[in-house]
Length: 183
Image 1 (cartoon, rainbow, N blue to C red):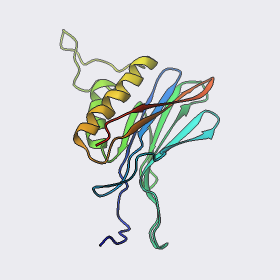
Image 2 (cartoon, rainbow, N blue to C red):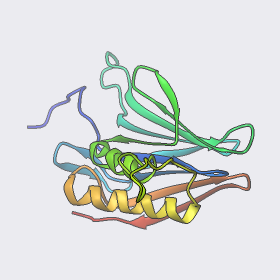
Image 3 (cartoon, rainbow, N blue to C red):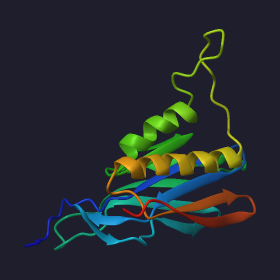
Image 4 (cartoon, rainbow, N blue to C red):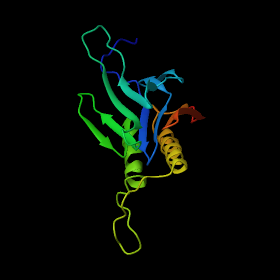
């Protein structure tokens, strides 16, 4: 018998990466409760205007009203200079501007990948010097997003189904959707 648990996390993962003049925010569409898939078409990202997209993961309901929403939020867009910007907010309201961030069920798999590929952690040139992160091209960012989620769906049951991208530029927000692993 299933019963209400106010601490149930509904799975799903999101990530965002800022570029020189764009930002990309992506999230899978799987919504779960434990090992059950509630839907394969959950929307996690929302265009909130002025070339800003907000994505959320976590427990997105309040139950009987005694429990607050408990979500992790990532906001992506362009700053006042037209530079890609990513802000992450934790469930208690702390925030930070970052080059990239992952959140949600598979974030423990995705964030180390982003640290290595975007932030260049533990990346050295032939002379042994630490590489310095630079803004990536849009094609590279989209490829990294696909790779991060493709890898996560191989190891995490709460990630999968489809990957929804929001590509944010000065011209507006463009949405794309690609399939992920369904099992």
